[in-house]
Length: 189
Image (tube, rainbow, N blue to C red; front, side):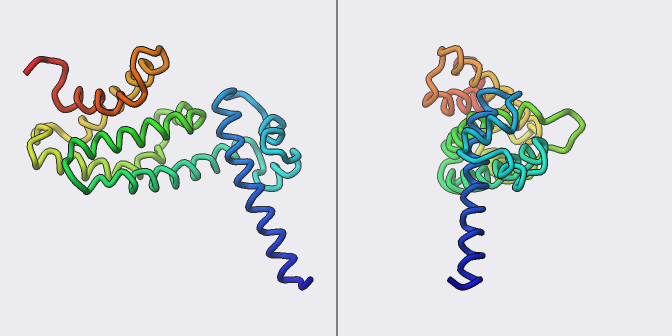
């Protein structure tokens, strides 16, 4: 075997291990936020030393999860096709994507602290464009600042997650409920 093939083989194994560690960390830390590297390593099917070869500390692993989540968010937002179709329907698609990300990366989102820049702010560009489109069509009041619409959307999504966890709201009904409440409020029209 040539040196190039050996290096490529080791790199492939390393890439697979890194991915397995990240996926295991999502599950383990989502279920037990205080779990340590040993629990993550066991779930990934690797040794602790392998985890530490990829991530120097638990904090480095969490930071890698943030980057991993950002990439997945970009992909899910692209799949939500926020530039296409009716803006209210596009809002439902993006809310569904955001709820799925929140479920998957539960361990990351509570660790965002006040005063620290949130990486998720980078992901708000498509949402801001979508809100502008909804305002242009009259689905959302153009006199309301997009930052307020986003703040209201976040609050509604937190409420929806609580209702889903309490089993008072079906997961598949949540995006439509959140968007309907955002766009029309709770009053009768």
